[in-house]
Amino acid sequence: MNVAVTGIGLVSALGTLMPTWERLIEGCSGIQFYQPFSSLKPRPIALIGKYPAEILSLTRQVVLDAVNDAGLKFPLIDCGVVVGSSRGNQAQWEQFTTGQGELSNWLRTLPNGSAIETARLIQSQGIVLAPMAACATGLWAIARGAELIWSGQCERVICGAIEAPITPLTLIGFERMGALAKDGAFPFDGDRQGLVLGEGGAVFVLESEELARRRKAEIYGRVLGFGLTADGYHVSAPEPESRAAIAAVNQCLERSRLRVEDIDYIHAHGTATQLNDRNEANLIQHCFSDSVWVSSTKGATGHTLGGSGALGAAFCLMALKHQIVPPNVGMRNRKFGIAIAQSAQSTKLENVLCFSFGFGGQNAIVAFGQ
Image (cartoon, rainbow, N blue to C red; front, side, top):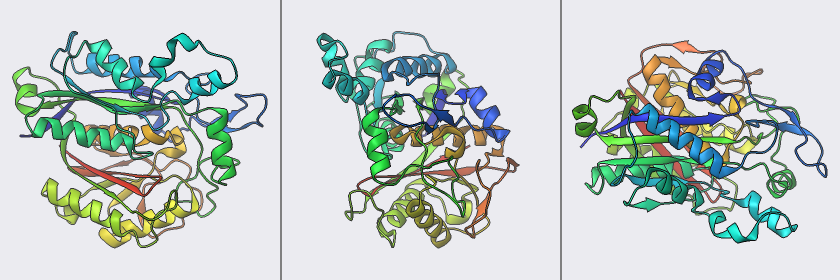
């Protein structure tokens, strides 16, 4: 059974789906210097508005956009829900500890908040799942959503991930790790400084292709397969030889019935940190031809942590629709021997991969096809 993507809802520091895509193709970045908390110094951040966003508001926005984009109406009684976040409502919990926030609403701040809000909004009585897999959350949600359709448990699933990670604890934590950039995000650049935190995410309407065709829905592309593995190596650092990541790539290709030479574009995780970009470039060189197009879009959107894989998946589907490889925004000093798209590239795209790698050594690869 084929799984079709019939709707996308997205929000980032560059805007909603079409404004984000258009600005991304132009090479724009939503990263600016902000001081969202008076106790912390200004730093580059990718905010959606002037102030840090609230996750349930973002969830409602992207879910409504995805449902409208798919041409559907409420209620969606039998629709499955797989919506995750790596931080969830952490911002609200931090407010509770300082005497702010309304404690009577604390039940709405649990880690499954976005999934429950989605189910409530679409009035679903179906399966509701809330994955948390660090920065691999978004792709894990898509993989699980597709699996629900392949297995016959659902005919339609809303899946994805949203993140609102601009909180004092998150900023301080990444700063103490030495992972935050001082000036901006420059993925795969020789002078990369580290990651820049961003807000946003994406949600997708997945349907059996039979259902999508029956109702004459527009189809962005198909979910072909996935690979999910864990390094079992370190709480934050990737395993140096990338053995589990290579296994995830091979799993994904095998399940998708694709060969290495069938891949036209890879949306890389590309966090602009020293270890991730080096390991990921080595992984790509090990598994693929040096001519396959590669780009990371975090120089434009910032790193939305659990939401980043969902954003990457949306860009993969838009790339298939428009036959354009999005640029690796922020590239100044070419470092690695892979075919990084420094500007948007018009080319024939049939099969693309999206990579996500999360803390704890969580590796997620999803393949999309026309």
